[in-house]
Image 1 (tube, rainbow, N blue to C red):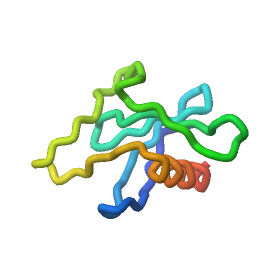
Image 2 (cartoon, rainbow, N blue to C red):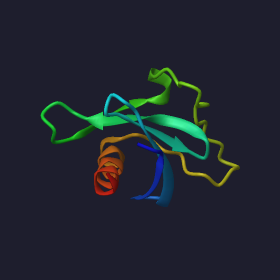
Image 3 (spheres, rainbow, N blue to C red):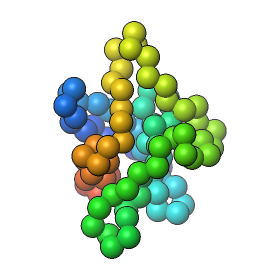
Image 4 (cartoon, one colour):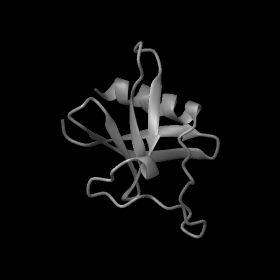
Length: 93
């Protein structure tokens, strides 16, 4: 499957993410060209889970680093954000 874009809502507003499907059924999350992390459906198939970019092998992606002067959001893969991303991925695929 080709990469695709989603828009999610977080407390700070709406953000656009680029989603890169992987063969293992996981999805790399890219924000402004940098890898934020990877999400996948957890065991039991009810909730999405995430691994941060620091815990992954980036696979050719630079790791996203927040810069407060860039006007970009500081994305944290907390449970609510991960579920929101997963909901949008499910809607697209």
